[in-house]
Amino acid sequence: MYESFYGFSARPFQLNPDPDFFFASREHRRAMGFVEYGLHQGEGFIVVTGEIGAGKTTVIRNLLAGLDSRRIAAATLVSTQLGADDTLRLVAAAFGVSTRDLPKSDVLLALEARLAAEAARGRRCLLVVDEAQNLAPGAVEELRMLSNFQLGAHALLQTFLVGQPEFRRILQGPGMSQLRQRVIAACHIGPLDAADARGYIEHRLAHVGWKGNPEVTAEACAAVHEASGGIPRRINLICDRVLLSGFLSGTPSFSVGAVREVAVGLEAETLEEPRGDCDAARDGGPGGTQSVVAAGDPREVDEAVVTFRRFLDWIRQGGRDRGDRA
Ligand SMILES: Nc1ncnc2c1ncn2[C@@H]1O[C@H](COP(=O)(O)OP(=O)(O)O)[C@@H](O)[C@H]1O
Ligand SMILES: [Mg+2]
Figure 1 (tube, rainbow, N blue to C red):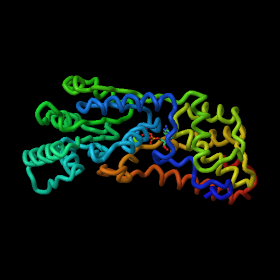
Figure 2: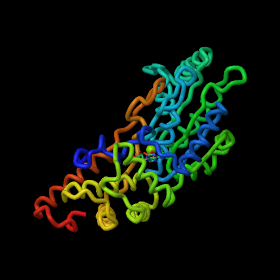
Figure 3: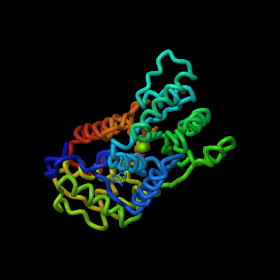
């Protein structure tokens, strides 16, 4: 909407996790280190947790984007309250196994054969389950059973479990000890510190051709950091609104005042926090990666509607007073 006004090649603060925009903050570098280490181990479970919008899916996509599809077959599954049977069938489907009309025992056999065939061709199989906090206990158990598949001494499947902080609590629960023993790396992605928040904002802007106009001061970045708690998704929401606000007023500016105004407006909006986060499987990802989309994501539609509604309100109110539309 406002890209050409600022001379940008694209919207700098979009909400979909795009590896092209990856900023290696301290938190995300650390997380990348964990997942790369985990990947290198070639077996068991790797657990990645973080608040909504902390960058979990981004880290995983960044990892997948760097994989050699001749050596690794990766499949992504986004969980929405999946039970055990659904999970098994979705995993099978994600690796190209048709499960229609097959009883569970045959699905298991077919999946094992498929994973073994990949291994025989020198490819190992990697499963990413995003939004893992939605998995029913039976579904987690099903995934644990799949981790038993072996060819000789080698595990046929390695699984990344990616979820919100409550997933850690689920794993601490009774009945999860067998899975816990198979976790070979676990990391939690925390918020960006103030310096990284500034680096993050400038990085995303530079990626779409920003050359310092509008000026983004240290104070404005500090205000964004404070208002967002250092969560990238919230940083994106705030910065996007600040740029929109500058566009609507005809003045390209990124001032502390504009940031605070937007932050107050966002706080007042009950829709600020998403109800769920399912963007991992929106596209097929890099070569060799297949995706199963188990849910749509209404969040971005909500956000577009809210932005548009506020824009209409502002027009109705005469389109002048910035304070009215924050
Ligand atoms: N390290 C990063 N570099 C660039 N953008 C990031 C980074 N971390 C998060 N983001 C952005 O923040 C938003 C939320 O990230 P996402 O990976 O979807 O979070 P999560 O999966 O933890 O809910 C996305 O727009 C994503 O592009
Ligand atoms: Mg996510």
